[in-house]
Image 1 (cartoon, rainbow, N blue to C red):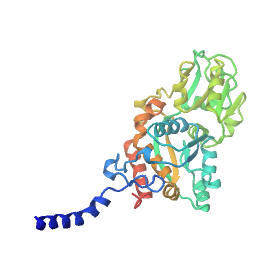
Image 2: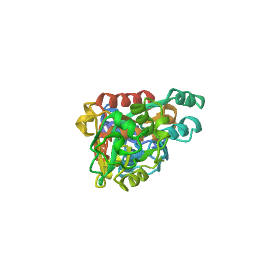
Image 3: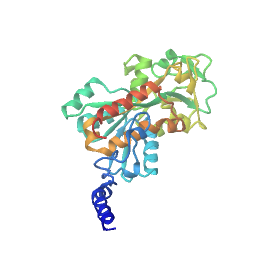
Length: 333
């Protein structure tokens, strides 16, 4: 009996350290929000991230077009347990890039256009290398009031006239009223402004900026109010703002093509464009909450984007963003 008791005691002495250290406590979220889960448990090759394990604040700014999508993703991140604060400022793509690449004040820059070479150079001067993450596709919506019963479709050439030299609607199309065109457009810091200028005016903004009866605003809600206020008003912004206000606005077909999911996905709609968020590997490594939010964004954006009013990006380019995330965070999870 004593022999068996001695053997039992020896066995317990050998295995007790394993029991004592067998279950490891999860590392603090600010140190490593991925230590608690295997990469294979994530989505699309990304390591899983549990919002309950993430803390620390996140600062974003930029495109008014991307704003409602980032706002939705931030709300879901919080609903699933994230206890920090996410600041999302809607100031236009250009102003957002300035805060990210020059002032170095933000962790993530929202953009409705690709970053420019000069903005990348500016970022390098403050030790940042912008990483691009494609998060969706927008169909730029050219809209008029519900009270406008005459404008249903416009060609790109007609858009160029409407937003520049034409004084009256009848100057563009004789069947349209001889009434002044009232124009409401995004401000010059907006990626939407840049995109429209490039597609319609060949990168020269002067014709549009010289037009009469022109109001610019970085706030798309102000543009909506202006457009719905008169049957002779017209403007443009991201499709989500049309979808949110479609009871008071009509959207024009462009070149006979309606902005809808199928036409955008098949690249038939002439005014479709990509949507992005940008960050930097150093930021993502030093602020794991930023990396966690981007991971979460890339994993679940397609579950939210249609409801917000935009269209999913091509899966190939989405996966490119996920790979960029993995490259930036290599060795940290």
